[in-house]
Length: 107
Image 1 (tube, helix red, strand yellow):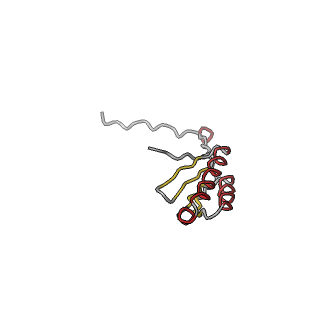
Image 2 (tube, rainbow, N blue to C red):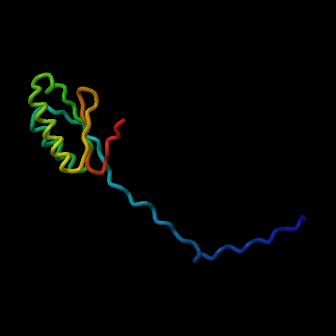
Image 3 (tube, rainbow, N blue to C red):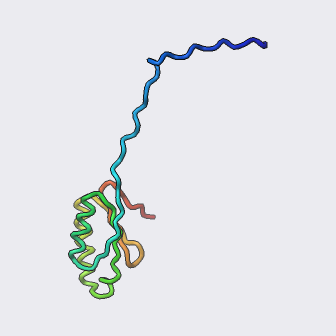
């Protein structure tokens, strides 16, 4: 009942296997931009192609020229769709645009 337990021999060093770590994913940046003209759309698309997430404000263009804003948003939708990205409005003055490896969860 009070005997010492036999100590098990240490496993040989050959029996240990190192586990490989997970592959490190590239850094994703969140870029804050502003849609103030049609040229801003090209800037945003360039960021999406680089793999970044873009949060863009559109209040100024919304207050000055609603037709240009609609044109910008339509061009973004088309371009992001072709790149398999995602786009969503946040409130009345912001949109989020993501590359293909990120999705926006909608409720």
